[in-house]
Image (cartoon, rainbow, N blue to C red; front, top):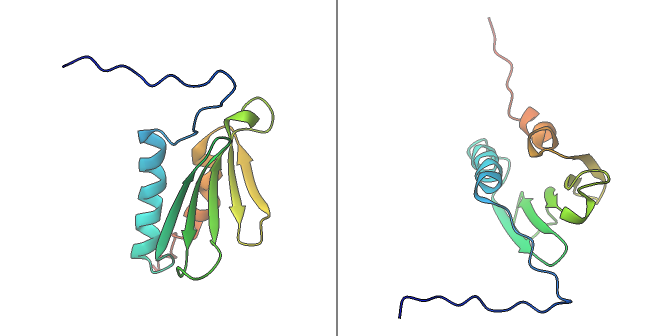
Length: 114
């Protein structure tokens, strides 16, 4: 009863790409702060064979304002992380998640009056 047998994956089929716990926590932390600031209201996750995509929406009926894409196939080239804007332009690409999320985190900074 206690033995778990993994389902065999096909030889030619790539596995599903997903975010690990640390990556997802970092992205959801940013999402929560953007919701608290009133910028975002909804999100979507798309876990496919080639990429894992986190999309953040201002409203659920619009195109996503930002997409965070993880594409392991680009790991050795430009980096597997990409921040894509609403019109589909790549805003930032890199090997680490932190610097890729930096343009969105800058929106949260507020000027402090002396």
